[in-house]
Picture (tube, one colour):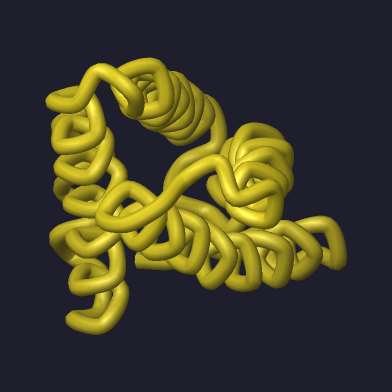
Length: 132
C-alpha cells in the first residue's frame, strides 16, 4: 500500500490533484450521506464500493506495477455503479443536498472512467510502460 501511495505522490501535479479529489468525493460524500436515515444505505454502499475498488487497485498494483491497467478496477466496479446512480437520479429518488452530492459523485466517476477506459485500451494495445 505504501509503495502504491508513493507512486501516486510521484505522479504529475494534475494527476495527484485528481486523485485527491476522487478520494475526497468518494469518502466525505458517503460519510455525509450516512448522517441521514433516508440516505444511510446509499452512503454505506458508496463507502463499500470505494473500499473494494481501492483494495482491487492495490492488489493489481502489487501484481503489475504502476501501469495503465490500474484503470481496470474502476471500469469493473464503477461502470455498473454509475449506471445505478444515474438511474436513481433519473427516477427522482433523491432531492436537495443528497441529489447534489450524488451528481458530484456521478460526475467524478464519469470523468475518471473516461481516463480509465483510455488507459486500459492503451495498455491492451501495448503501452505497458510504468506511468511514473
